[in-house]
Amino acid sequence: MTAAQRRTDDQAGDGEFPFTTADFRAIADLLYAASGIHLADAKATLVYSRIAKRVRKLRLDSFRAYCDLLRSDPDHPEHAAMLSALTTNVTRFFREPHHFEHMTTDLLPSLIAKARAGGRVRMWSAGCSAGHEPYSMAMTLLDAFPEAARHDIRILATDIDPLVVDHARRGIYNDGDVEPIAAGLRSKFMTRVEGGNWKVTPALTEILSFGTINLMEDWPMRGKFDAIFCRNVAIYFDEPTQTRLFTRFADRLTPEGRLYIGHSERSLIPQLVSAGLTIYRLKAPS
Image 1 (cartoon, rainbow, N blue to C red):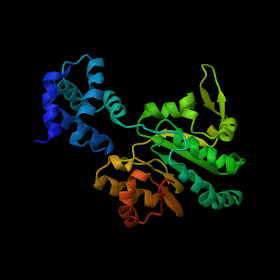
Image 2: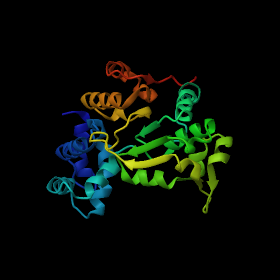
Image 3: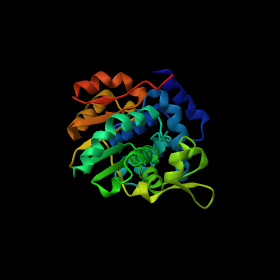
Image 4: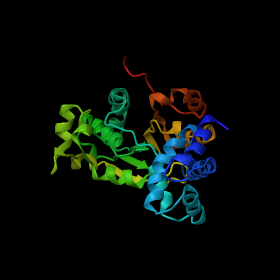
């Protein structure tokens, strides 16, 4: 038994609800089956802290009862609630800004020319969380190509968690959220709203569409993408799941298409290259 597992069993006596190694494994297996996300034993404390809130809300007396509920009814709405509780949504505007610099200087010139010539241009934020990434993509695009909405150029933003997709679709953020946005871009693409928050302008929403997509399931899109941003997502998958995902991305990119991955995913580069992908990942400036 690992140290993490021992801590899990110890917690059965110390926590509000009984929580055993078997309970942890049951929840980890349910999450993996639903999303491809792999929970290591070291995540046991995190699972307890997040799912205990769900156990309490449902007025159950143990994690075993919670797991029994999920296993007994595959259509129970608690499956979505568990997924939302256990997925990580760490994000911010212009995270890893060198990606957006590359988008401006190396990617957009050819895509803008393609759009102006009547071509179809599509980009995808696959794992959009609360919308910070796709709105950063849209600001970058519109800053370089203000008339983008008059051409066949669009950005798709998706996530597995419908709650964060709803947040993204609303496009309302607080002062802390918008702090990384350069003042010039903020004045163009964000407006103050009631309560002191900021809301994205219609110029951004006009070229964006949001949806809930599980990357492990069938994708409804049929066309190819000129760029896919899937940053800091694959690190939560095991290697077989990563391989399946990257192979599917390769099939969905145009011949000159780009896949942007996070700096934390640099160890996956050989695997990505073997899948035939063109990858953009730079070390952040020191």
